[in-house]
Length: 204
Image (cartoon, rainbow, N blue to C red; front, side):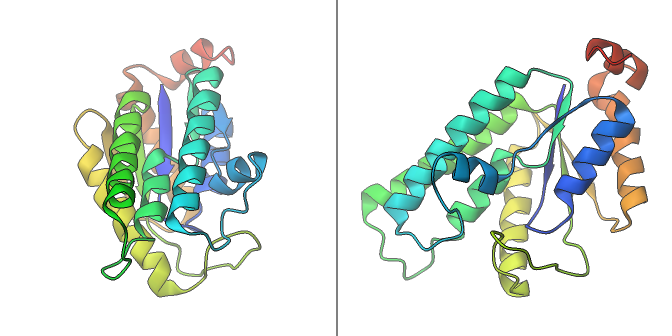
């Protein structure tokens, strides 16, 4: 069982994933794009042309894929490929002037992210932005319009991925309520109780 949290930057994904993992007795995988990019020598929020960003995005997704498969099942992560897809697509606008090859590469990356999400995840929980945005170094812009732009792209990606992967929207902002909603959904997603899941993970 692999669960993922999706949502725009500074929506509380990492805090929620860590707390759910602790309460449920399952593993936590830190899927932070910034962490993965830094491991590969990139500063993820720096300005890049589309070719460089595409290269970074593919390499980060490769690393994410390897790490999460190595970890195995019985875990929750604070990022999904759908989040990664949204940030790349957000770089493309009406007047981007992309050459056909670059444009097709963006679409191929989008398809890869959808496919990988369907392959890896049993469920994706979509979080809404928190009422207050806390600016932090190494994180994307605190511009609320940009944050909402990313959120809408992620919501669209979650909609596309539905079907083979269960998708659950969590509208609550209260942290305790969010934890409860994820914990309540886990037995139905996994097909058995939290106690059985903990035993599978060696934490029973």
